[in-house]
Image 1: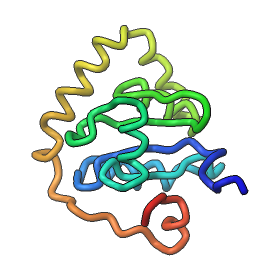
Image 2: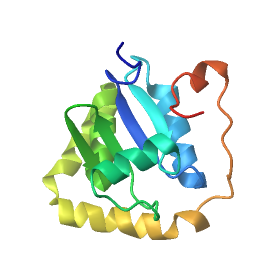
Image 3: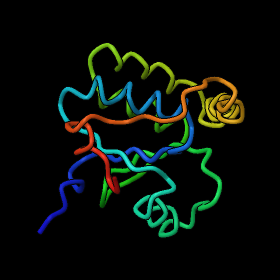
Image 4: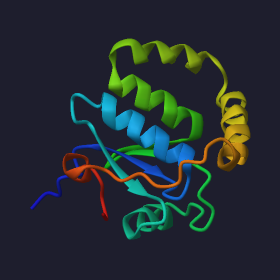
Length: 137
């Protein structure tokens, strides 16, 4: 039997980061076509994703977007791809692709290093409908 997440784009995020949780909520509110699911990098599912790809499993400063059985994006490219998938006005973010990845990732890394100082939001509690979009909750 096919898992419910296998046809979705999965956003892996730092489950202990207020900024990350803010953006998860932001995506949830705009995901009108039900294209995304979410998993924290600290979860068993998140750790398996990282381990299988030889990625860092202890430091959670990178956002990943994964389409199962296909590809995954990291950092700034993940952000731009999420906006593209959301569609509508968010597709305008594609202009960000004109910048080389190493430059846009430098901006991403700067934000990532300072993210814990950027918000006091600590915990996001999804409602019953939103819980269906999370893996390992």
